[in-house]
Amino acid sequence: MFERISAIIVDRLEDKRIIQMETKEVCAYGLRQIFSTILNAGTMLLIGVFMHMTIEAILFTIAYIPIRIFAGGYHASTPQRCWAFSAVMLFMVLCIVKYTPEKYFWHLTALSLIASIAIFSLSPVEDQNKPLDEKEHHVYHIRATLIMFSEIMIAIVIYILQFKHILMLIEMVWCSLAVMLLLGECKNYRIEKKKEDINE
Image (tube, rainbow, N blue to C red):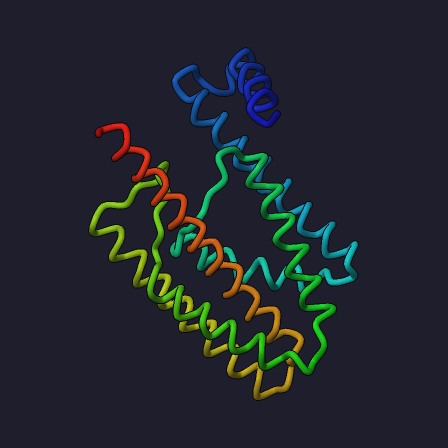
């Protein structure tokens, strides 16, 4: 959908001589990214409003996206599936934070600690469409580690201030990311296995 709309817009911009033919593809890509960002942000806000957890939805996104960029993990095969997957994940996270009894707080904390170990150990998990060379792999690992360490420090401060609700949200960020990394590893393993079977 966005590809078609972007193509129409850049064609009209070219007709009006606002852009040149050589830059059409770049402009179309930029427009697709803008539309995708608006859709994702709008969906996030709608889910937050629907759950009466708008602030929590925003905080989850702020904590999740930076480390996700460098830690990598599973990527859906199409933008539409990515959007749907992200929406479902956010909805599930908000449900867990909203409806988990406080007596299970430490259970979730223990699970998030396991998730953080997985993040430190596995990141970055590259995608077949975005392979990393050795230098990039090293740089992404360092950046993911630094962001993760920063979030842990913030989580400690939040715990000291007794904002358990927000702390649970951050812990769910780590759990969600760990799941994405494991799914990414499984996807990469299946791809490599399929290649080996073809070569044989």
